[in-house]
Image 1 (cartoon, helix red, strand yellow):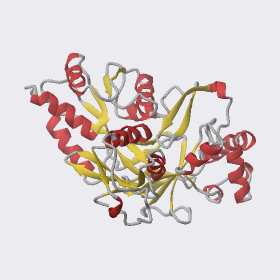
Image 2: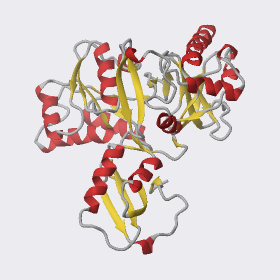
Image 3: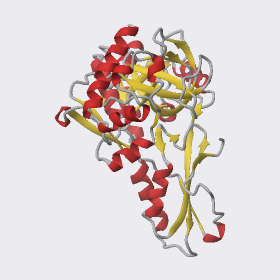
Image 4: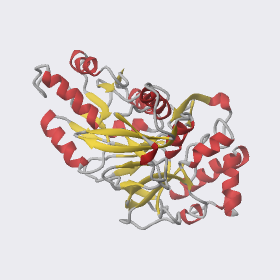
Length: 405
C-alpha cells in the first residue's frame, strides 16, 4: 500500500508537471521533480501552498490558476467558492469527491431518503453530497437552503431517514416541527444526521441532540478543493483519512510535519488526477492521532481552530480580500471589518463600515448588505456604519475575526 500510493503520486504529479504550469513552478522552487517523490520526507521538501493563494493564482491566470492537468472537455461542473476560487469536477467523478465513503461508513444506502439542505448554488457542498448519497443507492431530497417550514413538513410527508445540515439548521428544523405540535422523535422516521462541525463542545452538543431526537449523528472533514478528506468511524475519535488523500499536520511557519499529538495546520495532497493539488494548506488546525506506514496521517483529531486570515462562518470561508473588494466597490468607505459572534446556536455576522467623510447616503446600508452577500454568499445580520472620527487606522483594515477569539 505504501509503495502503491507513492507510485500513484509520482504518476499523477508527472502528468501535472507536464500540463500544469503552477505545479511545475512548485517543483522548480524546491529543486525537485515528480520522480523524486518516494517517501513522505520527499513530499515535505515541497513548499506548502496556502489556500488563500489560489485566489491570486486564478486571478493572474484564469480560470484555474495554472493548476488544471486535464482536458477542459473532461470537466463536468465548475464550482465557484467564495474568494472566488474555481474548482473543477470531472466527468469520471461518480462518488462526489469521495463523499460516498462517508455515507456508506454511516450505514446510508438503499431504502434511505436523505434531505440535503446544503447549498446547490455555485458552491460544491450541495451537489457533492448529492452525488455521494446517490452513489450509495439512497434517495436524495435536494432541498438546498431556505424554505425551512417546507423542509420541516417534507421530513414527515416523505419519511426522511437522514438529514444533511449544519448543526444549527438541524436544530431549527426539529424545533419548527415541535412548535407545530409534533412529538419528536415519535413523529418522524429520521434516524441519522450528517452535521456540519462547530467549535467548542460540539461532541457534547451532538450527544444531546442524539438523546433528544432519537438519532445517530455523524460528520466528515472535507474542503471544496478536495471533497472528502476524512470520515468518522464508529468507536474511533476524529476522522479516518480517505485513501485518495495524503495528509500531513505541519508547523504553520516552517511547513514541516509534526509528530502525533501536536496540533498544526492540516496539509493535503490528492491522489486524484486532473486537479492535482499538492501540499495545499487548508488553514484548519488539528493533531494527528495515528500515522500510516508511509508516514502520512492515518487519522486526524477533531478540528481545533484556524491559522491564516480566513474565518469559517456557517460552513463558508470569509477572506480579508473579500472585505477589501467590498470597500473598493464602495467609494464612500475607507475601511470595513467583519466580526463574527455567536447567538445561541447561530453564528452572527456584523459588518462594520467606516466612512471616508461624514454623511452617508440613505441606501448605503442596503448596498453594503447586497455587495457583502454577492461577494461571500452570506448575509450579514447587522451593518454598522461609523463616521471618519472612529477611524483608528487599524493596521488590518480588512479584518475578519471572531469576538471570542
